[in-house]
Image (cartoon, rainbow, N blue to C red; front, side, top):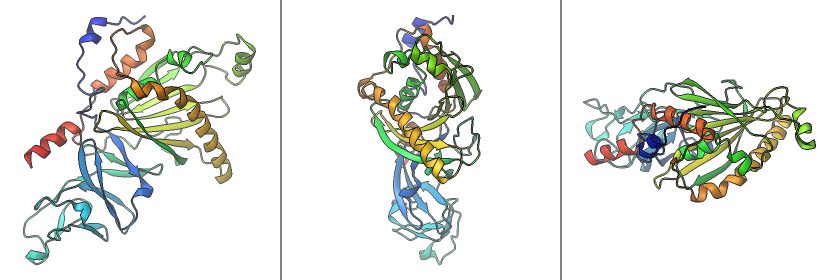
Length: 345
């Protein structure tokens, strides 16, 4: 049995875990791809930081610091020209890398190098993702069982919770709550596997014991342990894999902290590509499965004020996740950094 230090957990001050003023470096969902049309620009705010996001003529999405480096006009008030963005105020134009390519008042070509910050952006699963650091160190989050192969995906509900994303994530690895909240007739035991500094996985290792007619029926669909596993990327995005041996369901929860200490989330349903009709059926089934587990947790997230003052052995996966989160690097685009930048301007 793991020895848990009650004194340590009561006095712990977390650098990143459950801290609304900081965020681990990684990919965060920014908006739905459908929210930014070709040739359009819109303002966005994430992790306490303002951005101007535009989709150029080529279809590529770019995210720049919101305010022009000349006099601070908001670039989202400007217009898209090809794959570049022109400021409304003095008409300076910036390319996807953030370099100024035109200063009309000075005859066109900038006499000195001027640039604004451009943030790494990718699109996947119908979402625009942003890396809150200099250079992406991982691919956009994916389901380990599916790898980086192209999958069928569908956006489900967008939601808000009254607690930090880290608290939302630990709920899915809380062994005991599956019995107390969801009435699962199986006691789960989550085994931890830290893949890298950016990725940690938790997998159930207990089998379904045929103790009743129901569990005897369910046990027929599992040769080994009951399939339930979570993969967390940079403590910001989680993927769940569950279902019988012959058919696994995959759900992604893309999360980001809001400015009130809560969570803004987007659910993504994922399946292997098998043809349009079958994909649609499987994604619908995935939605039903996800809704079942989400229903019981709604009241918890509405009023929880997380604290781990009395840890038990059943909390071992949660403690592993907190430790994993604390050892990550803080992103340069986070609430704390944004406040410092804003103070200097």
